Image (cartoon, rainbow, N blue to C red; front, side, top):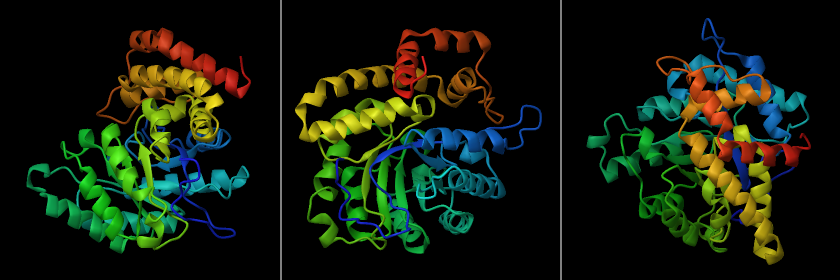
Length: 343
């Protein structure tokens, strides 16, 4: 995690995919019409950027499956404009482009590039999960990577792709043979799988043996939950893409920084362990409330959040209150406020 960028040095003026914390940004909607609330979206992207958390637009937390192609484009354009205007022109945008078919996924990759995204993340197609053999899954990512104008992150999320769960052998094979793949997000939560993949792609010789098509886009191994950021540092993973970073961006970014620092300075480890515990407990509790619960917490914290797009329903007021008062959530909020200077 600390410096393991597989040989990417970047180029002047170019955005680089580097280790760190990424947040799948929620898509906010007007309460009566369900139209995009781009003002709140832009404000949230900038809020997270100030905490050194990078945006992933139109991902699972962003309800991508409920968005039209035009809405995806509008979100990417809004995020890019907001970042540029706030002085974060060097911060990259990752856009979710995975859909049911290979053809439409490739189409969305091109649309994301035209809208201003820098990298894309592609979930395994799961509607016909029972018919997708290992060969079909391999062919899907090979073709998408080959045809996408942007480097592609593989998104392994069995819960949203019909139970399909890519194993470490297939992911490692894809990393070795597809130069336009730039990483994997493991929302399977399998730390053993993460360790096995890192044992190959985080080795010093990997970049020379398997160079990337874009040298600014090394192959990163990213967790999908906040509860193993510290352990993953010690197997040379590269951070995480986590919904919790929407609620507690400073705490998540600080945990990543401490985890990286602990590799070289064991004296930082106790503080990293303490914060990991706070973040892990908060993640465990908030994740059970899903998208609606995260949005409800954002409403409490920042004054925007709103409801998901139907058929998802908002969290009932009593459940929101119980979530807010939960000791794990209050502990996380206190840590976040202390780190960002707000008591």
